[in-house]
Amino acid sequence: MSEQKYPEPIIGALIFNQEDKVFLMTSPKWKGKYVVPGGHIELGETIEEAIKREIKEETNLDIFNIQFITLQEFIFGEDFHQKKHFLFLDYACETKDTDVVLNKEGSGYVWVTIEEALELPIEPYTKAAILKYKEKFLEENILLKRSI
Image: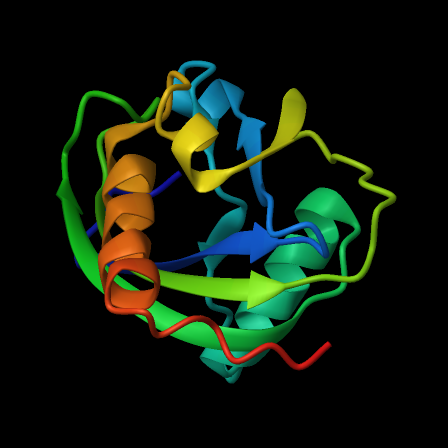
């Protein structure tokens, strides 16, 4: 692996099912804490394409109604298994799927309410994304425009 020269943009998404529960998975890369699925954007790929691809690869879920939540900076944090500088692009989306198949990125998963999620041992940037989601979409009464 070559030394990182520039910050790497990383996409991630809070995935909501038909019961308004959010998907979180545990990841060895994040020391077993709960995180959202996501990853890098490939050259020539749009952000939406990257989110759909990463979530499909990591969970086997098909998603839609993708909405931006926030941008976060991760600079050499201790929670990740490598020394990295990331720019996290956090999104919310929906799924109608219920059949989760994790790849090697995840070691377990849960579907929980937003409030239940905040009680779990979640990685701090995931927690910040959830809190921003609450502020942006729930507390301001601007719910995700349900397309189901």
